[in-house]
Image 1 (cartoon, rainbow, N blue to C red):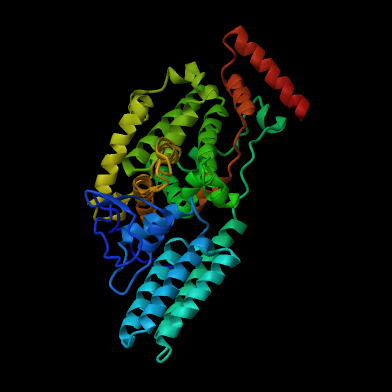
Image 2: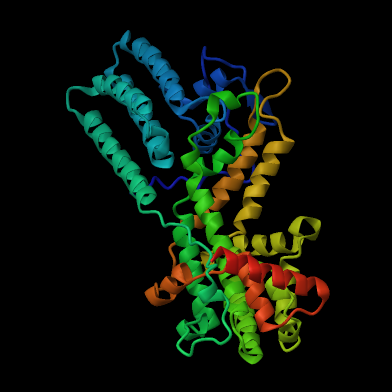
Length: 473
């Protein structure tokens, strides 16, 4: 379902929604600093959300408040409060004689509901929220019963909402089963590779093409991550309001599935390297993945790049000294420099900022691609949450904190909307998504079989692992 294009214009340099609305006799307790909204009671912030005859909230505010409100109040409760305010305003307008003002007010309420249902459709998944939405819609419809225009718009909005919810439900139903690492002795405890054994190089030997297919998979998966999913990071944390807002844990599935993809890719890289018996071929495999990671970096796909580097840094791969001695590591050193964790991944953040700036001025989807390292992105949101309180000492909501969180999430949502410019290769993607991956134990055994233990500690580990897997089988 096409969405109202709000993200391209929202959250400017100040991220503030600076214009203070003329709220008349409405609640005036929100606090502003230099024209920027920084705090307010929940009631005042809700009133600022609801349009009046002469006021419509800034779209940055709508997004930020609807995103953050779930930390303090359930969506159906927020809808009920919005409905109560609408009823009060409707009654006040009905006492006048100008029907056009009533219609104008109704149009603004519909616009608010439209933005809400398009941007946060999952807020309406339960019966309570749908009931409140229908109640508001019914009352607004009464403002224009003559020609039925309002009723038609609401009907279309509801239909689009149901389609969006259905699409998300279907995605949950057909979600892939997590690949289980291979541990059986027939697969792992081998002495010779089968001549027909397939590896990644037999499927795709071009690093650029593989990087493009990885990017295709990344964009496909981030497209199923929604702003409310990301807000679960905050609403699931310990807070004074947590008992009110703890969400359905199934909402975090998309985050977990994406994180699982990162882990699977790392383990696949390690598996592909460790299961190659001949040193020359193993060296070629390592250099191939280095080139793939480099192409991912050039594309702007930092998540796949980090997963590949993580896979090559796993102990079963890192210990293959004879292999690494034959690898031309200059390219790998550059990649590790970009992913250096010192100074809070300063080098990576500089590269990410460069990719983001390129994306803003890009003329093609190819140049717009920005896929951040997802677990670092999540940690950034978590850090923002932990260092700033949800409420100030006076009890007001610390809205300045949520401006910052919404800015982070806005960037991610902008990047995820980029249409992948690369054509899907089903054969390559099938291999990437379904090829067997080894467990950590199996990786060590394959590694030891490729290059034998070098010291007593490794010899003891090798014997223990081999015995464990044989007994388990």
